[in-house]
Length: 69
Ligand SMILES: [Zn+2]
Image (cartoon, rainbow, N blue to C red):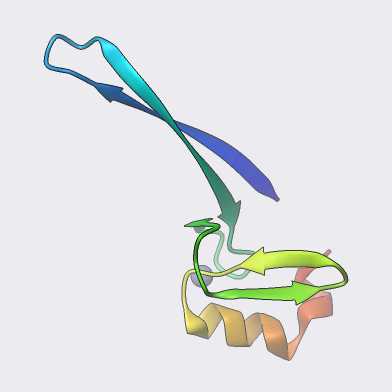
C-alpha cells in the first residue's frame, strides 16, 4: 500500500511557497507510515515492503505470506 503525502511549506504570511512530494509506504507489521528511502525493506513476490524498524522487518521475513496479502 503506497500513499503519496503532500507537505506544504509555508512562509510567515502563510503563503504556500513550495510543495514537497514524499512517497510514503505503510509498514504492514505495525501500520506506521515510513519513507521509502529507508533501508529497512524486504522484497516478496515482486513487491517491496518497508518497515519502521529491524524488529518489524524480521517479523515480516519470518512469515511474509501472512503479511503480504
Ligand atoms: Zn513497524
